[in-house]
Length: 490
Image (cartoon, rainbow, N blue to C red):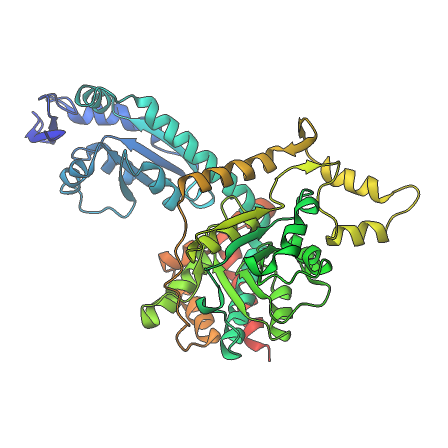
């Protein structure tokens, strides 16, 4: 049984839908009065706002809202796909409208709502639509919509907070690393799937304190494992004369390059996200080591990925999930994406044990020991590192909200087995990084919608650090200046 039955004409000749139960969405006598009452709260807005409207029908209310200057986009929510097709017939212009169902509501908001572009988010449903839905589906409750919206907005808020801190660093790093990707391509240093031996047990190495107790297993049985070290654990393994097949890096900050101060074994492959610090990648290039580049979802990297894909319809970049932003998660998903069937985690406790934040041998040991004084000892420095945020005690372990969130995400990931897939990654087609840079500048100047999306993390940073500026033009100026510098480098 369809949710909508038919369209009838009201007394004023406006088309209004009847629900399955023969009840109208708006008054049969004066539907425009109902529309006016519903839309008044969203008219004459002083600032931009994004709306989620429950109930579409013939769209009398949505068309009025669409004409409002400061309404950026409207998510038009319907019960199911059939209801959306019913409604779409009554719209000629849908530039501002994004249709969604109860089923895909969360993903649709996540993929399309950008707070720094679209403004604050507001939700409102037609009472007639809610009542009809409750009768149509006895399990329906409007709280379902509200909870989905709140959960999604919370995730977006967390992402925006991260972007507002790292947006500029990522933007710079990505363009530098597109050039590094080209250098690796030209030097035949891009890693391919034949280098990853999936018949072995995948060993993912973190740097939590319990690695001190388990590293002996890696030393005694090195041939059993295909080892992917996180950047923090890399020097620990080297000091124990364990050469990992792969080392992964994700952090874009300059300080992350300290994990690679010592000599790098030629045989170790670098697994580097495009957002990672380019100094690390350049060091591996000079070392003539193989490199595998990853795309963890930054819209600029995804755009470059698509630009390459359109050249030969083949995937050239490893697409992986870093979950909530940990290099260990990136390393694990990369391994699973290549279909390793056996795995083991080392140093992945996401907790401080024995009053230590890390296992022995990280660059923190060298840094804190070197700067240690009677008034500021190594122990004081490590304590400051552990207690810089609110802690959660559990017997002999100390954790934080962030560490707990990382652990919960990892456990959920392993339970649900929603892994990426990269067995279909091929060597890239012939390309010039300069061609992409020129194409990108041209696309930005032409205000192409898909390209504008690649600026969103940078816009979040500008919005956070440069109040009252023209965000988009600021992002455009910064990007052009950066690319012109890179294009003029020899």
